[in-house]
Image 1 (cartoon, rainbow, N blue to C red):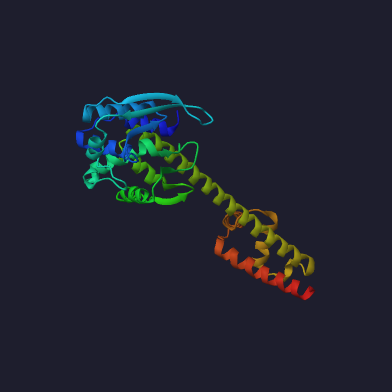
Image 2 (cartoon, rainbow, N blue to C red; image 1 turned 135 degrees about the vertical axis):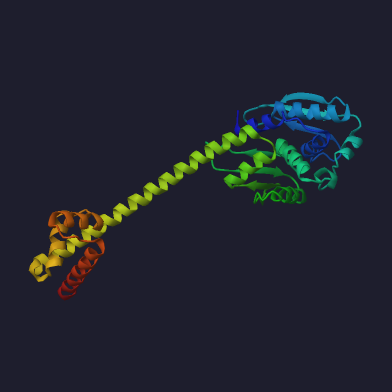
Length: 301
């Protein structure tokens, strides 16, 4: 079962009061202007639609099963109401563009409405196997803008994209998707999602630290080898006696410990000579050595 299916199955088991049931069913029926007909691949969504209609309007919907035409040929559940259609649609606040305001009049009703839209029009990637992505596929621009507005009331940073003959409202932020799952009441899904998100974020942070550490090591080795080249050039051209005693000491120890960092090299010199040598002191010694080596290179050119 996909992560989307698991989330839908979880939220279809929530207990609601009548006001929330009306808003959720309105979100499910969003595109039904002249009829009440829901087509879904989810058995749990089909059961939810049937029970909501029965509880709210005391009407038994007709349920039909058929094979889909897609590659997997999954079973499609078609839930259809053939009586009191106009009265039910009016009670659900359904119009040709966006629903009546009483359907989404407060925060709790908006949560219920978004849950209904999610059940029939949305999908969410499993954070374990893919990038973070939640999307609603909607057929009407004005309605898509309305859904985006509802989502952004919760600061979910949703965006709108036109795709061929439909509109996609999507959310990519990991924390925002987690917030959406909380909003629609998918508690188990939130726990799973956050566990995976924390693990992935920790893994990414570890990789970044490792990459940073490796980059530092590479820079240290590159600097050390450059210093070795400078020292060897001076040694071949004039001998190390042209250096001051401090510079000569630094040069000898650099040739002896070619891959040590300045910090490590200063500690080694301090221990072996008994004279405390700090990193900044070594830095200035090698700076002078480099200047001397550069002068030799300029003369040779």
